[in-house]
Length: 360
Ligand code: NAI
Ligand code: MG
Image (cartoon, rainbow, N blue to C red; front, side, top):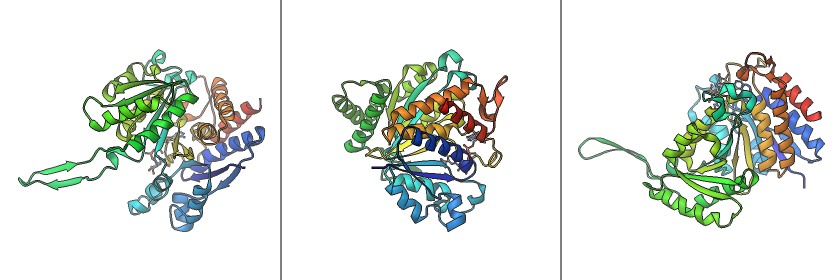
């Protein structure tokens, strides 16, 4: 049966980067005979302008019916005066994530050797870095109840949140992480604070139990404070890291910045069946929108992740990732990753270069 992909360009640089990513997607679709059905929809500010809502019913129906969603970025100053719930981010993007129960956030941090200068760390520490952080996205302390700020009897205020994970929630994110490790280097590090927090004592127990189903994956455990140290000391020791929502929020941003280049980082958010939404980690970059300056590679690399994790086409994914390396080897750079001696190119020229590499 033909697999369905929904393309949502969004706002700002979204349409520009998506044009290039869609060319790449259509190219591999025909080259590998994937027989994909590719639809387009409106989301975010573009949808607000056209239809008065950040997530039109048609888009939502298409999203529910698709195997994978490819999203550019949403938001921008034009819509910042709307009530938060109606804005592009909350009313569009976050609504898709929560309605489709996309609890598994996969964030690779890859530093291409050609861009080793972009990192704030020494080239020998980060060059060739290729790790994946799997973050639980819909549970943990960010969602636990009760929560709030209350007045105590002595008049002092107290803020409180609840850190809670059910066994089933730990299991489903654990499975995604083990599956991802299987598709990569076969090593999984579960990050917790099991020396202090009961929730993560359970987390560790469940990961160990799950590990018995994945004897081919080497499971290790690390406390989150040590993981933060190790990420900046020797990040290449990791393959896949799995952790809860809050630890993952912090560690994935730290890991992303090891690479120093926001225009290169893809991401995935997956549900229990492997359906997912794929998007670059960056936003809609209103400061450079419409100028042909945006780097389309994070979105093109999101296409590769989509093929690997939701469409079972890892071979096509490898080919796209290889093509990205080729264009970096050839010295093509958009402004965000430019350095002396390289060739500065526009968004569409970068797309042309990737297509040429795919055709070669
Ligand atoms: P941003 O990621 O859009 O931009 C940060 C900086 O990085 C800017 O200087 C921008 O020009 C640059 N940049 C980002 N992507 C780039 C690319 N592909 N190529 C070259 N340079 C790039 O973050 P910012 O400025 O905080 O947010 C702008 C808007 O995007 C806001 O409305 C925000 O709410 C929204 N946003 C949307 C996200 C999403 O759709 N997933 C995620 C983050 C922000
Ligand atoms: Mg964050």
